[in-house]
Image (cartoon, rainbow, N blue to C red; front, side, top):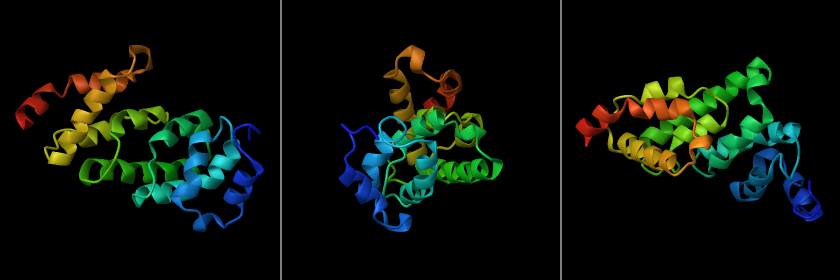
Length: 170
């Protein structure tokens, strides 16, 4: 890691416990610095199962991790690793549309990972539960506050098809 950003104490703290004993607080700093100022792709792959586990339990936020996955080129990883990650992403997506206490709108964060958002967006279509609709509103706001060059055009195109659904639901 960058010696100005990550200290030896940081390394010891992260590596001084078995992976399954690391909590969200100990991994939060690593997950934000991963690949940029702390570690490489192999390090991310090492910590990723625990980060995903904590996130799916609601103990950690995956939002910042999605861009890291894209940066790590996970879509070129071995098929078994991609399949496991896609299974986790599917669960995360479903929780984001159904659980009241979930955090970030899943649409653009999923696109940041490099994963095709199409199947996920289609699974969302027409759901009129309060959480699914609120998440749709969050996604519209998130896209609106993203510079045009940074928007995922697949998400923007899908949103353009939701007007009738939104008007009927609201």
